[in-house]
Length: 587
Image (cartoon, rainbow, N blue to C red; front, side, top):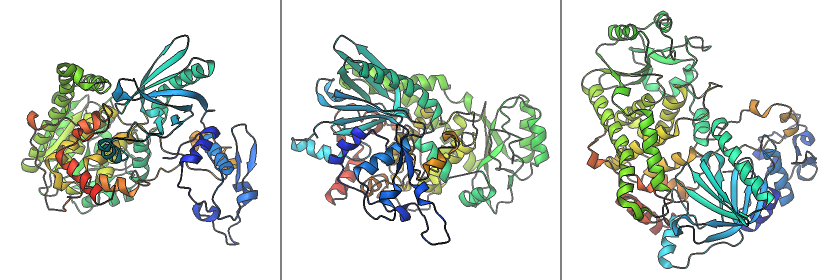
């Protein structure tokens, strides 16, 4: 992922970066060199540096097939960073302590803060001496290990959960607790530059969570859209020929409901007039009943809706039009959001400890609360799947139809639809259920990202399904860990050649399309996230043993920062898989 760094960092990275990409001005930008396309190349290559000074790259690089030198690289970086980001602050001589050593050993380097986050660059690269550690280290270069013993790493502002600092006469100690369960401790000299960096970081980390979309949200929203009829026909084509369903366009200008997309699927017998009349009787949410999934084996529907003030109107309408139908209030079967948040906080306490073995009994109690939430969710999903496949259609009712309904509806579809267990099917499912059917994809005044705690719980539940049904998923649990990390990464901003014209428009009005979530991953990463034993079998409904004894703690995700990257956090299948890839020299 591209990062905006200062010129001092760029010069140091020049010694580390050995893969210099070739810059082709007319090819990479898609600019035609024929006479019919009148392109002002002088204006196209004009950019600004951090001091507002105009730099013309066109005079030296027009029609060039040569690679960018460091001077041009810095100008390109500054042009991107000038769009809304701040001047970077750099502190030299920063001590970074390893988590697994109880902050006794670490490395020294340079810490830089800019508009994207923190970057640490050590003065000397680290090498592993022990042969046992070499095996671990070779695996730790890939998803999901993120080895700490690296000469360079970055911390995105979205990943910062909280920050604590202590100041004495000589040093400033700063501990950062990340949303991905990582704890990082820095020690810096006590000076004005250090205090300014710490103060600016505390302000930026709070504001970034509310204002900036994550890479996961942005990428799925841009690449799996559910706004137009054509989008639904492309991504949900199995509904086309169903006589029971239709696409309603009554919400084309969001006049019916501002938290639903312009088009959505409803039972064919429910007319637009009925939907309008139904909305007029309620005061909360304006969430009309919509069809989330059709089970093709028997035609039963999965319907999700918000709670109505006049519940009898909703109940009578649906039961008259959709027969048979069983409505389920999911909030009565699942823990409250407050309980889930509290169990998640307990889980973070365990993951932030220096040594997990010091308080084993207390750790088990804290971890158990989270496992209970995961297990309860799976039990509810198993019940709903049994109803859909054997009895009747199911109507999921929740207060605002944007929290538990997303989790349950997504898991039910994964259980009964093989297409949802592929990469594209899984990604489009999250986009539909979590972004478009909740309004996060287009409402300006709504939160920019999904509820990260519920999404983490959802990914944990999917990992349980993969463990119990390893042959039925195209992706591995490492892919889920990659999606988890993408919740806390900002999408990279592309370089704008014609920045002089772009700068006239407010940065908030510029909408860049984010590439697909898996684009740019190297081949060795793709080998890990793709399941090697996936078989396109005709398995319709997955097997699920929802007993608490079968619910495993996802230690490969939650405890990956607890100690040096090692294999004890992985399942037996994952260890065999990684060793096999290493033996083939594919890692």
